[in-house]
Length: 180
Image 1 (cartoon, rainbow, N blue to C red):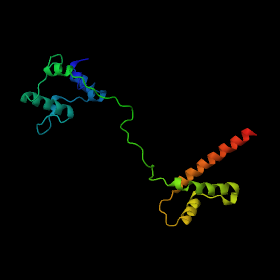
Image 2: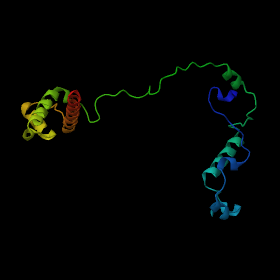
Image 3: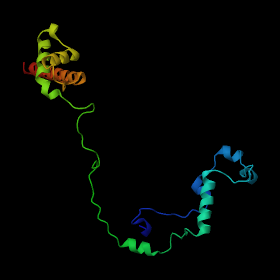
């Protein structure tokens, strides 16, 4: 492992040709290649694309001596200091940054307080087909029973509870058929 990548995990490599950075030209650009005269616009300014901007900016930094370019094989004092650093980073299990779940997708769930009543209404419909109720009607019965209550389950929650009661009923019927 190279000293430069010990602390920063960054590896700098030398590139000698722009082609290796930019990539090969596509066939359209090769056939419609512009000359040096085409790169200068009408007002005398130079090319205005990202690559040209980066080259001009790097040239400016080098001329002003604000940055220096060092060979990647050069020994630097910072590399020697970084090689002696031992960082103790505790390992965390996957998912450690996830927020804990709280509540439901659509707000609070008030079904637990009314499960027995919904099951009673469901059982009435199971015994007599004429007394079967849909979730909206079950919610109306609960509203009539608790007129001043605002924390009532929604139709979707009641529908889910009815589905689970149906599943329980089917499992019970299967167990009874197996014992016979």
